[in-house]
Image (cartoon, rainbow, N blue to C red):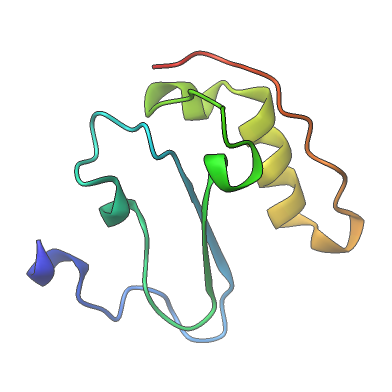
Length: 89
C-alpha cells in the first residue's frame, strides 16, 4: 500500500479535491482514498455531515456529495451544504 500511495501523484500547479467516505467498504482502509501532496484538499463527507451514512457507490448519487463537489469546483460561489441522506452503499 505504501508503494501505491507514495507520490508524487498531484501535478504541480493543479488544485485537487478528494471527497471520500469514512464508511467506504470497498476502499480499505478508507484513508487510502486520499492523495497527499501540495495543492490537494482531502475531505470526508462526514467532516461536513457527521451522521451521513454514504458509502463508496453512494458517493456518485448523493445530493450532499454533489454539493461538496460543486463547492470544490467553484469555491468563490460555494453555498451551504445541506446534509441530506442518500444511499448508504
